[in-house]
Amino acid sequence: MTVIDYPDKVAGLIYTAGCNFRCPFCHNPELVLPEQIKKLNLVPEEDVLSLLLERKGFLEALSITGGEPTLQPDLYEFIEKVKKIGMLVKVDTNGSNPVVIERLLADGLVDYVAMDIKGPWSRYNDLANSVVNVDAIKETIGIIMSLAPDYEFRTTVAPTITEEDLLDTIDLVKGAKRYFLQKFIVPDKDLVDPAWNKKESLSRAELDRVWGKIGHHFKHGGAR
Image (tube, rainbow, N blue to C red; front, top):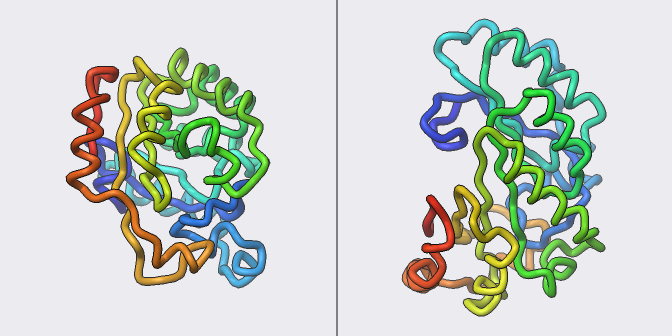
């Protein structure tokens, strides 16, 4: 149960295992690295749906995060079942699968999308530690802005991301309904690349200063 993952809603939260990015600053290596995924005790779908049905009325929504949820081959069918229970659905995504996001939105199965924007195009491969199809990322941004009932874009201001990077990043999502700069917090466990646990990132005061320069480009948002 979460009160922070779906804006203004009490929601359930589930994590999907597997991701096509290897962001070194990711907090969830157990959901990203294959050797760690093998150690997970996966929860059967029927158990998830049963719990949601039992808590219907208390829970208003389900937030699906990861990993990267759009990699799951049965995501569409699973969300259909959740919607039949009568819950709102939010999906977190890295934006790499525009076809999946477009189908979900076009068919009215997702009520809120949160998409991570890693940084400016010039650093996308570096920050994702993967070869990224930036055309797919651009396409997903456009789909979300045109089809999503509600949405947000957000950038986790990870180590090595500079103020100049952030000023370049907003060119990707200018005019969006919501955009957030998320303060990077080092967890009490290893990141995907443990070496990044010791790297420094921009301070809260620095993020606030950047937001003061870019906030007018968005309807809602801020540094959080």
